[in-house]
Image 1 (tube, rainbow, N blue to C red):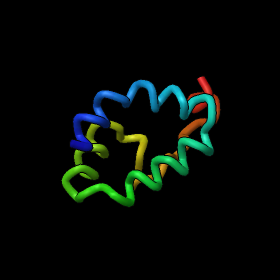
Image 2: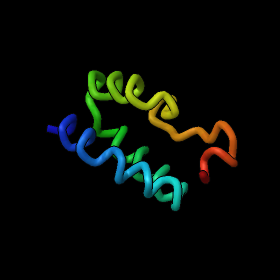
Image 3: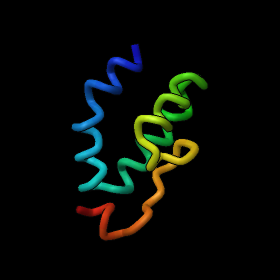
Length: 65
């Protein structure tokens, strides 16, 4: 169930992150804490920017673009 919801809303959620980085950080930390190991593994493959469930800003100019 989470998997379908995640894939369906990934683009919308990602846009929110770009506008409100801190809100996105708190949201993903909360969601990641509830995920199963299988869901975490899939998320880390789908979005490698999320390292161990935490959003890491590699380059501040990229994070806000």
